[in-house]
Length: 493
Image (cartoon, rainbow, N blue to C red; front, top):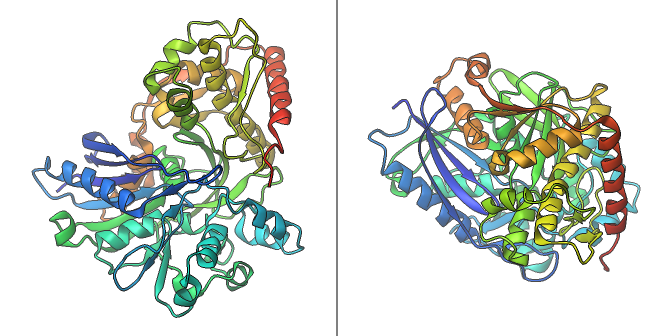
């Protein structure tokens, strides 16, 4: 009964990891699931695929356990939007994924109105198709009968955390936590509540929304018929906030970057939200018994997904793990630049019409140069975020804690140190998203007494120090900005 189960529902796969009291992995399972691209800029998931893949890996891990876990924590891809019937739990449509850009034109329309500044002030976010509100409005406007059903209280809205808890509890709980709520464009950072004015701006019925509960503490139990066990659900956070918690960034100024499908840099800013002056996001980190923490966040839409494109779109690598060896066969990119704006650009540009661009190729360009340019693009996008974060905080980030699958790529991590000009620190346990969910769940049942105890468990595996001179680094960053300029504003309406 000392182990804690974490469910990590990501954009391209679902995972279940069992952690022991020291934070070490005992058992794990993972399963990829289908991505649906109906037309350019649209990205969907079948809610059944999300649930079935998560259920399967949870069951696989539980079959390896001799004892029932003492708690369960959930972390999830954020902003992805689902709507289902409250009576039978059947979704009314596919989930609209956070990467989806179908509502970009509507965001442009809202941005032309005076209210957009107030929306951003209340939410801490920028007005962009990335977030849930416009996706939810699109579903209500385009699924026949949906709006009338929602106004009658028949439909439930949720991000992926809410969907999983609904399924795990056989429909007994319709909840979310502040970290996920703060990504919807419907949650007021300063009141800590769903905002009636925001609901009115997006024409969203209040009856659809889940209850907002703490990120750590007893929420309910899994239904025995679902997992075969009644496990307390005591931890809940969006994936990037969970990773920040798993990296023990408990004090203001500490920052982490997660290299997953996208890249997400977060810095703890303390108990009050910080309004960014550099087009970053202000978001809730978590709410525990020790209080509320906020973060500044910068989002790169195409991180590991850029490497997946090399594998699936271009076919120049067979497995994602092959990219490091291929890129290392050339000393540099040969002045080839890849801007992976396949679904637009996130912070600090926020250009929904930007598109992927490959520049600088000659007859001497090889697939190795393109692979290296792809890795450089991941690091360069993140370097932009860290620079903006330092300007908002009034002091540069002193070091960056890294996690996620691509953080195991030593070449990429060295590029990140070189382009950012700061040390990159990789911990011994890099599954920090799931670990953060486990930590939140464990705090909720008293497995650990406080966050200081968790901070003492965090251990360094390797540091990457910058090797480029300042002049070379600044030249590379300037060249990157030239490439960005050529990618912007390309897509037609």
